[in-house]
Length: 67
Image (tube, rainbow, N blue to C red; front, side):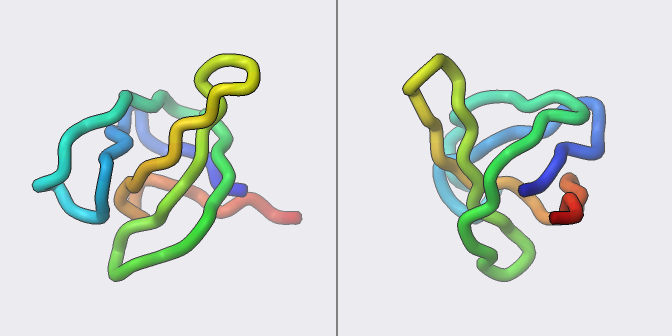
């Protein structure tokens, strides 16, 4: 699990700023981490009960939570 550590972050469709934005994330939102590619991390967020969005964000915008 990871947590957004900046006031606002962008969840993107792929691991680059060239990919379109899926949604905005706010500070302290907790996400499930899936994998890392270069300095990007793929995460999942439940936007509505039972509806999960999967996307990418820069690693420097998150904090890894202890298990």
